[in-house]
Length: 161
Image (cartoon, rainbow, N blue to C red; front, top):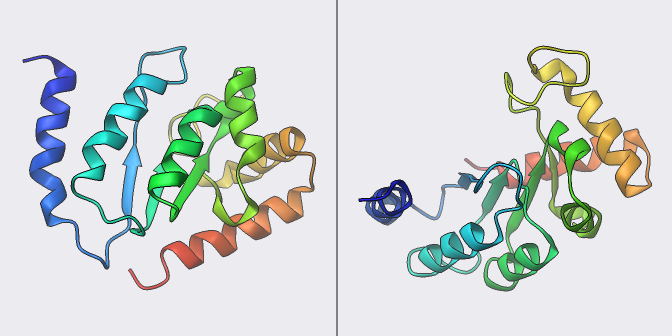
């Protein structure tokens, strides 16, 4: 069995335990160096069979492109998109997705100890401001605004969990 097939099989065993009160957090990526379009769409296909349309979803460390983002929001409009310091390495397709995320769906993440800020060996929660600065530069807004909406979105998403 391939690694991907094993991952899908495991996911199909776990998803029936998902309850309405749970936020489905997905940390997902495909091959190094690509935006994982095919892999994201495969995951979306699997989730359609198990997850209700308006279930709250947190796509942690999102690296997809606009096409993937649009497909997710069509099927799961309650999806939030988390971004970390990897936005500094995004392709133009990935940047388009970051710039397209509605303020009400944006989350900032450090994913400590991974994805450190420039000049650091490891990441930590204290580096959230560097993520905000990177996202701000790419979205053309202010650090304060990005931090404010991310905190509000996190509180809203995880409000009763």
